[in-house]
Image (cartoon, rainbow, N blue to C red; front, side):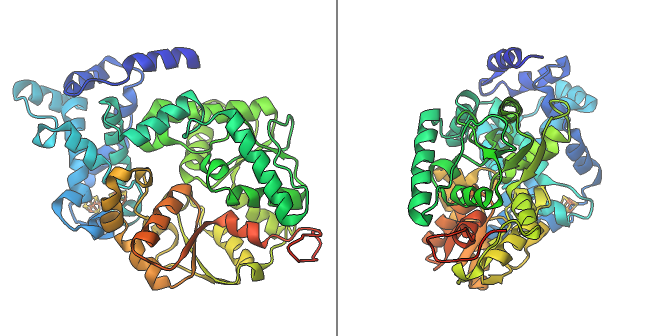
Length: 463
Ligand code: SF4
Ligand code: SF4
């Protein structure tokens, strides 16, 4: 189906009035192509229904339950809210019994409470690493978020970001002109800092690499982008960004809005093809990378793609291994630890590469406890770090474990691989008065990379 037709169909179906969930869910059985997304996600729901032993291991390992160990925060209690709807509307027995004995759709008959509860899961997947039968509550919560979105109850900041991504192509709703202004400013900064003309090419046809950072790294925290500009410069890579597609994030994935998730993804793919690039390098956003690499590309949403896809971590780590860039760790002398973002670690298995980069870029690297696949979420995952409305929850409940870990590690710098984690960790550090600096990984590369005749002092030539 053409994207225009899909968009038109989607607009007609969007924002189902509250209280009409029942009739809406019944439409699933009428093979509605968009809503079927919910019904067609049965494996996690079925696995739960068939195998959950109620052993409670998931709760012991959940950062939210750790922060508030009560019934409301228990993963099983939350998932039951979604399972109940699934059983009621998507199984024959459920339909039969609910026709005979009508029951409420939601706890306390309150769809807003249901929405709140779906956003009390960080979708971090830690539970799935420990559950003896592999149940992943994040998948179930995301199905719940899809329902929340269909009812128009997605938290406004996330709904706005998703809409901006659909309409303007980036979360902030920024124009191409704003992006180009920002790039010009950053090029001037790079020249002032290094004395070198380090370009940040935009809309350049037939470049080898299309670089796609999250828009926050272009418009707000630019150190990561400056670091990548230096990496490409030092390695002699022909690269480009796009003024039409400069936001490698994906709020559709976060909010359970499957249409937006796919549309945002298609937007980047079209742009990479249009520019004729052979490799897409995605920046420090785990959601977008997971959707692009493991869902769109490997799931062949848009058929075979005419370019390769990699993350900025795999890309830079390979350049270091190949000796194509050199890093001077003495430029990052303070002790540095690494917080694994859930989506890159548990979602994409990218664990070693950020550490390789940090060990090359920093003089004193310290591991955070429980790092890797079984990392503890920063407490702002699943889009929560963008929500002021749940700040108390993030500071005291979902972020509790990460505060303890940051204190335990005693590192002066906590580096992380995701813009959302950076936002949450900065807030946690400020709120709890932890004397630590929060950075991106390529922000430290930005400090450490050795450039020919670099004004910053190193004389080591690049190979
Ligand atoms: S760990 Fe798995 S089996 Fe045990 S209660 Fe949690 S979801 Fe159920
Ligand atoms: S995905 Fe994370 S926050 Fe959600 S239930 Fe599992 S461990 Fe808890």
